[in-house]
Length: 373
Figure 1 (tube, rainbow, N blue to C red):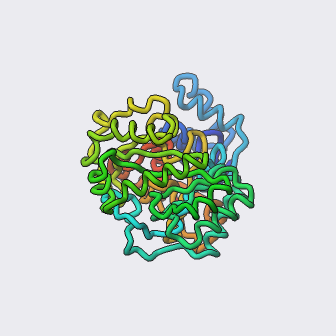
Figure 2 (tube, one colour):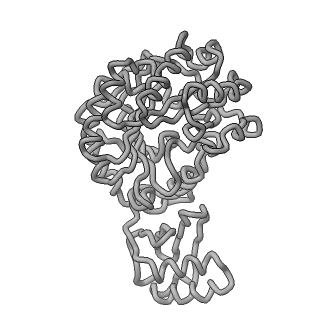
Figure 3 (cartoon, rainbow, N blue to C red):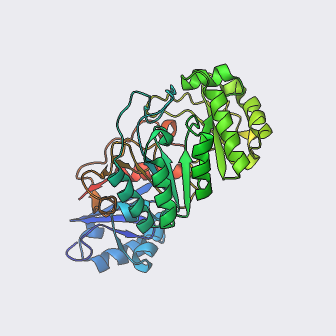
């Protein structure tokens, strides 16, 4: 094309990159790429749009692209515009890599021996950025966030800044009565994982003797105080036959059916995916359905790891977007993007093995075709 858009841009659901003799459009909703080459791209931009409109009469995908290019206001193509469509639903903030359990399937490879953690200035900067970005839910996680000396102050800061929802994802082992008395009045919610009604099975999964009783006690503390709570049952090889009875136990201590989630072990960190979807009894939780990493559909996700790395989701750890130790979170999100110079990099194997959510899989597909410009 001799004239027309030069910088990559977003038009409706399409990420568009124009290069000499080529227009590449990636459909963020359907996961389809459209490459226009040859005579269609030999003239100016107006001629390209006119030719695209004519082809749209016989190809619905091209008609959809033509409508977007002629009716939608273009936006710069950045991590922010690509991943934050519909606003930011959740930001996962890993305060520390240290944990008082050593779950054999931990996605973050946490353990009592890990020492990596975010400093208070780093945590403070991310929370302020979350407020600026309009993040609807901030999850303080880890490792276990309650072993971080900054957890209480982080929760206080987020609520003081008016972040709409602050969630603490913890195994509950460190949630003493006194700490609950400080956290719960802030209005924070809690999320925990639970594995079996049988203490020995739960403790086998966590690698921590006595963990089932302590997690159950923490759940009861939150239930008594009336804070929002969700409990995820993660299906592993050890506990798959116990999930029904585990649901009954949790219901007996006051956890509502809609507060329960379920998912399979995923192939992230120490986890190993067994493709057990046909055997995982999602039907036990018809009111809740499978876990979606704590995020509702329709908004973007971000994760800042305990090493300062920025990921598009807490499980999308193969897609590093930068580091908050090199640039601010907001400046990282405003990084301009373009198509990869060669053919798209190979797809990461078995996205379903790592990612529960369809939107996370679409994001991974898009990021495999785009790179910082």
